[in-house]
Image (cartoon, rainbow, N blue to C red; front, top):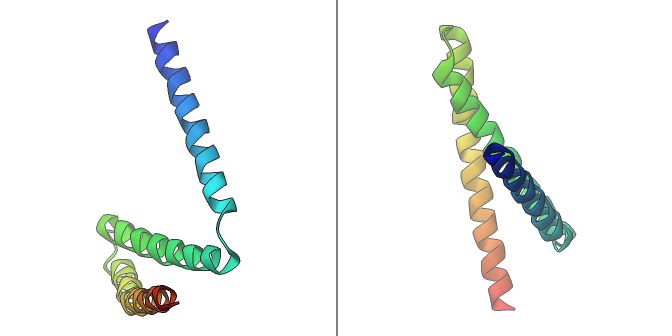
Length: 93
């Protein structure tokens, strides 16, 4: 019985987290949602490349993943700089 109680609490927490996430997404303006999606895409690509390269045994495949990660680094920096510029402009208004 105790395990069942823990299980239901976990499900309840997951449902409340999903509700909170849905509400926060609904409050974003279209340009904010687009920026958030760009950030998540870049982040997930980097995490995937890094994770796969650390587990990869084939040297050529590892080299390809490391190259993809190296290509993402300047994209991330450029995106970060553009977000800083946007936030500075927004604070000037």
